[in-house]
Image (tube, rainbow, N blue to C red; front, side, top):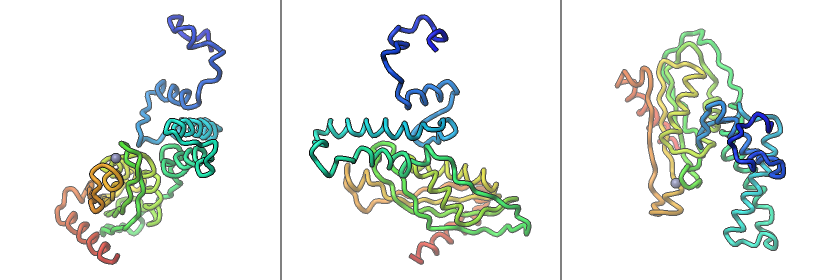
Length: 245
Ligand SMILES: [Zn+2]
């Protein structure tokens, strides 16, 4: 390894006594070398080597432990926070941010043999995310409208892909765009519309403390974008679905 590094690097960069580098550093260096983005709402699962998730879990738990110490919490004597660091590490890597580290769930698409071209909507699909700014929850519902193209996917698969996309730190506007990209990739619809209505805990729990405020945003593509009557039909169907709850 040492011989491949440019001689201009300070010697401490290669010093063996520095010990093995943190796994997150190795992964970041690998991503940088490949020119791959690793923003908060990017998925990096293709760039993780076997065993690295376990190593990440240990590294993150160590950092959370330090965070708790910096918050002047006596984790050595407080039975409630004794294993909080390990729980938080598992929660981030395998639950609330799993959409960054885990592969997309396997979703099979089928040929649209009957040439279905009537629009349909699926929802409400519950979505859970966290804001990139404070890492506090964003909880809401999502409706997806499809005008089928050459491929179709099962209804439950929309929930699976939405869960995977939203389980990352996000801002809501980007989450909706990324979900639209993934659905287009999966079933190439003639038209796609997505509406998300969510509550942001960074407005409810902290900051302005506005418990009633929700954020609604949508994306329309293909025929939903070009045909205003189709777009209106989507929002009408969503309104009907919403009134059922
Ligand atoms: Zn926030």
